[in-house]
Length: 262
Image 1 (cartoon, rainbow, N blue to C red):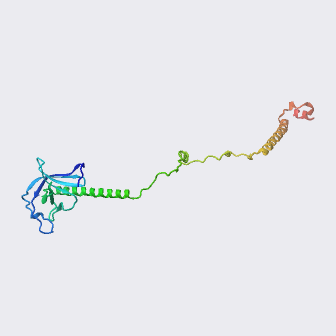
Image 2: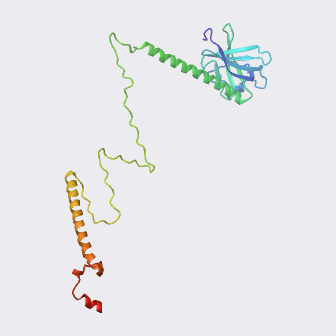
Image 3: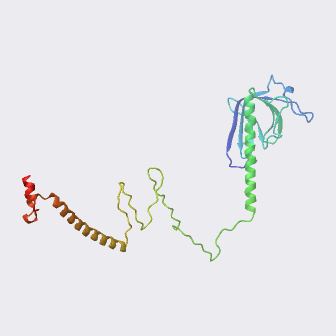
C-alpha cells in the first residue's frame, strides 16, 4: 500500500476508452472479448494511470468534467487486478474497487491498438522499477546486518606520509633536425683534427712531453743545416753568375789576353 506523504505521478493518459459489462466467468478458461457487446459499450471516457509509491492506480474519468467513474488499484502486474483476453490485444479485464472495499470485474477496450500497447507497457515499466527497488533495499539490508569492517586507528597507532619525495622524471634529450639523437662527447676527451686534404710529406707524430722537446731540437739542427747549405750553394752559383769585371786581377787566368784578342 502507498504510504502517507508520497506524491502521485502520472504514468499514462488515454483520452478514449470503452467500458463493458462482462458476464461472470463460469470456468477457469480465459476471458474472450467476443462474448461482450462490443458494438454498444456501457460507458466511454478517458483513462489515467497514476503511481503512488509502489502501487499503480487505473482511473476511469469523464472526458469533460474529469469526474471519477471507477478506479482499479494494482499491486502487481500481470495479476488478478489486470487480465488480458484470449482473442484480442485491445481488450483487458479490470478489477475495480470502491472506498468501502467492494470490487467488481469490468471489461475495457481501446479503439487504437497503439493505445492498448501504451497501457500495457506503462504497467510493465512501473512494476519492473518496483522489483528493482525491492532488490536494492534487500541487498542494503543484508549489508547492514553483516559484520562491519573496522578501518579506524587503534589506540597508539600512527602512520607516516612521505609527501614531495617522488622520483624525478628524466628529461627527454632533444632530437636533431634529422630526427636522430647525437650522443655528447665523452668527458675529458680530445677531438682528433681531420686529415689534410692535400698530399704531404710530413709524418704526423703524436706529441708527448718527451717527444715535443726532441722535435724542437731536431727543428733547430735542421734550420742550422739549412743555413749552411744555402750559403754553400749561394757561393757556387755566385762563381758562375759573377761577371768577369768583378773578378780581381790576381785571380784572372794568364791567357785572358788571348780571349780578348779573339
